Image (tube, rainbow over all chains, first blue to last red; front, side):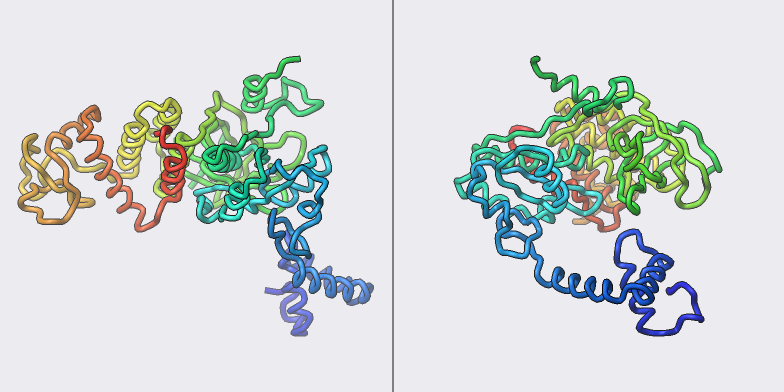
Length: 204
Length: 244
């Protein structure tokens, strides 16, 4: 369905608007605005966008080691030999990895799951496809696992599952801490977080 | 259908899924409205992030406005404690949530089952005879949705159950004397049927037969759908045999 109905019957324009709707949060109205903007004011930008989209969609794949997005076989992080090869941090998605890289001084390796265990979404251990991860566990290079999945129920389930996989291989397994956010006031922190924070108290 | 405005209804989150950039569609289980979906607008953004407490296995109170398929969540508060399920207990918790998600009808009062939800979570978290907790919950759930298993008489002859005889439970109707039933149904002893009526699961033979019976009944009502928490359960038990 295209906004504007009978007035707009140019097939190519309609297809453009329809294609723009594959972007998140773009409905018929915004798609129409984007299409007109590109056609009226910024054809050059539109061409650049289309080239870039084509290049990116064709060339960007998954890193063979960490499964993050990369245009090479092995991504930059994995190819960097100065990083600690023995540590492996496991995250749910590429943005999580980017956030950790930006905020922490962690200099080990990563593995991106691209998902989490969630039975009600139809994702069980088999659907998550952990063979590549098990291969890395078995490679003998890694000695320490850091589980940096989200602190949701699904994230915890995933962490537990991978933790058990690693433990059966005698690897040291760590989970990132949960607690009161920096600058947070106890009164306004929810009960669950507070009880986690209290249980995980550390010596001063 | 629901009222236009409901305040502080006790609720448990069964499942959430992302909607648009910062919103969530939350599937909740409530005593007065059974299972229902709520739209939590902007739950993942803002100062008071509702998504932080819109998590399964937490006792909540929710308020919403609007009728129709997707009322708008207007407020959510913690209403009590919080259970942190891990490993096997978590797989059991997922199983319970999956049962509710697929079997409890929308907008039908389910106070009886609701009252059993938190106790069963507390029970499975203690590691002591989790299977009994699950059986009791399955039983209550079938009762709540109007499919309580028929346990007190033979459905062919109408005679009361004899403790010394063996029966076969014809899914979903009820027990039939084994010699009259042929190969159909699930084998179950008369004593087990009596124990089940009384809610007594102490006998190990009872526990096993009841598990087979409940599994078949639940499977029947799921209409062929496979529960993924079962595979989660079996992979957890493979990884950690002591956890059972």
